[in-house]
Image 1 (cartoon, rainbow, N blue to C red):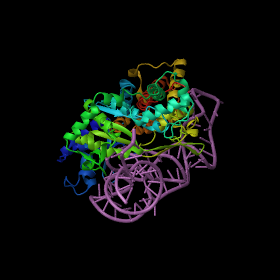
Image 2: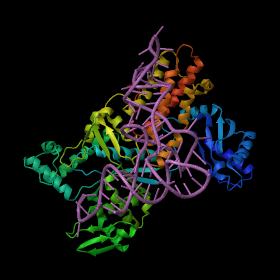
Image 3: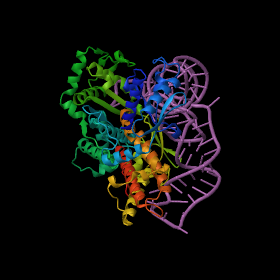
Length: 535
RNA sequence: GCCCACGUAGCUCAGUCGGAUAGAGCGGGGACCUCCUAAGUCCUAGGCCGUCGGUUCGAUUCCGGCCGUGGGCACCA
């Protein structure tokens, strides 16, 4: 809104001084420092050379002169600053528009976009083997994938979330043998599954049940229940067995063969992934006749491409070596390898009271995701895993997270939503029910505390767009913290109802906190965290 | 050795296509509840943005080298 107006004004000014600049290349940003105005542009610095000017400040001067002679709406003044920035200083009225916009669009649509419309993205994440409970290491990818899906929907994409079930092969057989052994009270096979959960599952299993089928169903149930606790839901649970049963693997193999990238050597069938930058060629069919893991997975990705325009895979850092060969296979099948986006999440380490705990040990000494949720609660778990970029390895201190303090970042934000609800209730109880927005005198909102809340709200729309484009939900949690900080500051200094607060100011502030509530709720929804009304 | 990511305050991390005096929480020092939740607010100390070059009006940001950390280099899944 205001951004478009200012961009237009800049484009007009450039034309007026006889310079051709592509309007799409005009940058506007929010300066870090207040004295640099409300909005700022670097057009003069970026274009003084091609425009044939002697220096950036001189060019900026021409632009500001024109703008000051033709002030856009809400603009108080346009100034040259620093090396040649064009700074816009606005009247507070532009922030009242932000409030109006937040309230009129509401929490479900505030900050949303439509630029993804017409494109179908498939997001596959977690995809843990259906033979043991999810462990803490799955948590980051789970809440990340789910939040990325929420973000993509928020900017207009059609999104399918998917969980790939590796439900056939040696691992499943070993799992069934281990479960059966536990049922009989025997030792589990050497290379089988030794986790304690199998003792519990064996106890649950009816005597006449088939260990493979029963165990598979039990594991699936476990995955779904655990994920539901942190509000993670998948639209499609895709079975590798169904892929094989449908003959999709031979179909994919035939297509690969047609591409000329398949050959036989040493009794095995190979794919020439080195043709697409891989270190070495990869085996598709082993000498013993079985497929490698790769082969059905290629068929799976081929299937996904038949159902969506773009694919996003969320993989742990330990799988990054797998990216090249999958992209190579997709390219051989005629798909655009860039339409397969593999996002690698760096690993998480957990500690309790300063002592690192293992969470993916082979012998069953892992921390399950359920344990983490029991310990810190679903909201703290979700929020915390989303406070950092997926590119950095994360240290999570479970004991700190379980506390009600600033070391638990979700509380700071939720405390704001709880306070807002409390304020509204108290105001109503004191006879100050909120009237219509149109009747509120927003111009009574003049303190820095009040305006700062609106300034933070004004950035949300851009933040959502960036977070979605960069697949970066942590930008939402960072923003939420900023908004909560602005609100808590307002709360400390500005009473909604009280001595010396006029009825008009009370009304305006009731609408201000409503706008803040919409922002907080809207952002929390994007990261799948609740906005409690009391704490 | 090769591939991927990372290196920002004592600790944990942000930093919007390169921008003007690099931010937050914890921890350290101090202040604030006879009106709406102190799970809060305010002040203060603390930085060679790993390092050396390059690109340019301008580099924490982009590129290359080096050092360091984590992960990966299967006819396992």
